[in-house]
Length: 109
Image (cartoon, rainbow, N blue to C red; front, side, top):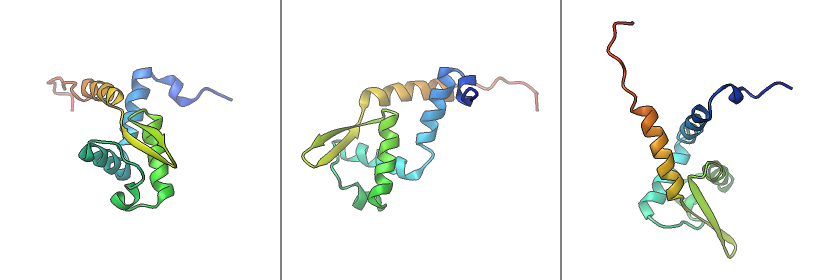
């Protein structure tokens, strides 16, 4: 089997792509917004807040956790999620550098 296509790109390019992917679904954006709004951990009330089925919410939480933008702690029978502030800051720095590139003034197109 050949190399994964991601192996053709730099670590930075892959990282930017993964961060961008997490914002590619409005449910993940809504989950992050809710976590910022409540400014604390949330334990299980995301289904009523976001309005999607539990398995769907769980899948989006898994994506966010896989990238390290949120973290979860088991409390009894629930998993409580909150923003991983260290990784959120890192993601902001990486994306800021990428998005803050200046376009050179040239008559190319």
